[in-house]
Amino acid sequence: METDARLLEAVAAREGDLVALTQALIRIPTLNPPGRNYREICELLAGRLEGKGFTVELVRAHGAPADSDRYPRWNLVARRTGGRPGDCVHFNSHHDVVETGHGWTVDPFGGELRDGRVYGRGACDMKGGLAASVIAAEAFLDTHPDFAGAIEISATADEESGGYGGVAYLAERGWFDPARVQHVIIPEPLNKDRICLGHRGVWWAEIETHGRIAHGSMPFLGDCAVRHMGAVLAEMEDTLFPLLATKRTAMPVVPEGARQSTLNINAIHGGEREQEADYTGLPAPCVPDRCRITIDRRYLIEEDPAEVKAEVTALMERVRARRPGFSYEIRELFEVQPTMTDRDAPVVTTVAAAIERVLARQADYVVSPGTYDQKHIDRIGRLKNCIAYGPGILDLAHQPDEWVGVQDMVDSAKVMALTLAELLAPVQGRS
Ligand SMILES: [Zn+2]
Image 1 (cartoon, rainbow, N blue to C red):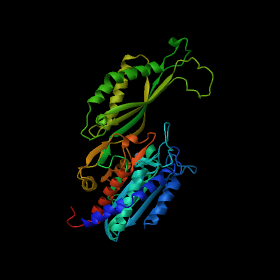
Image 2: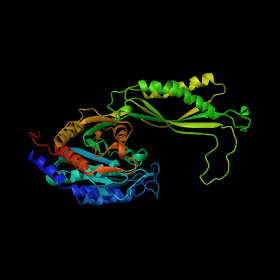
Image 3: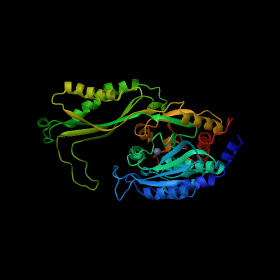
Image 4: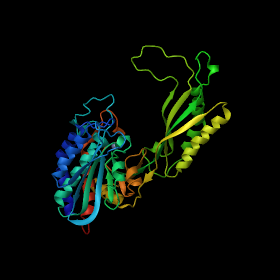
């Protein structure tokens, strides 16, 4: 108990350092795409962690999607080993951020501190969480010089674009092998009192309807691919969306609206290509011979992925049966299976106990509507003992004026530090 109290004090004493580190990370604009300044952010962390006795490796994902000499996909993995054998606890954060977009009232890369919040692109998603894990590890090391096992901290590339130049690349090369890492915490902004066990599945596909080009003044001489797509969309409204609404899940997905199967149409395009904004001419009259949509189907742990795809094919076949000349193609783009860690997994029970200790309330268990890097740790790394836990409000991610609360960062750093103490320096009789 007494060492726990000292540990919590050590985290609290680092509040200024935690804010400064978060600001320093925000001030390196690691925009993805295209993947800027990845080397710079890895070097900032490498210098700091080497100073704390970590062995640091910078790993470039050579040959990964979007890796180039202009925009190399750099990752950092830092490891500090204790004096005795034991488990390895790994904190994984992505260091990339999405574009700023419009509507900011502060400098998106200024890291401004105001009224207990740090503002900037990536503040909550997820540089605040990354900083909290660094502070937690440093406070733990100062108060527990004699510990078992190892602590790892990674900062990885490209989570926002699928993680192939980041966690997937590392997992394929054994960095998340259960023989070397036993517990993984991903400090994504799920709120300081919630443990995220996993995510729904994803299937992206492109559907194309075919027609025949002709002069727009004589559409009867052609065959309009956009009208064919209209029939597909009408069939979705009539049958598919109502069906998906009936598919509910036992996964504790938040927000509540995502506790079912969903489908979004991410894009639609038919006919003549859109012209540049500075084009001053008129469009040409043609019957569109191609129309394409991109569908984004999110599915549940209770669903069979083959069935998810078969539903769409069956829908297309129903349209074909009643429309003369109807033909189509489905191209699969991307797929991730759902994942959910057991509630009695060691990392889950340990973090839950730490949340109760720090916040004096029970942890909530949630599942994310969208995927994050846990998919690679589970599917490629074969490591099941993995959760997302970190400060910040998920709804603020990717929005203008993104921020993370200082108190939330301090509290979640305390939870992370207690988790390290419990897993790497257990004390008999710790409550
Ligand atoms: Zn994120």
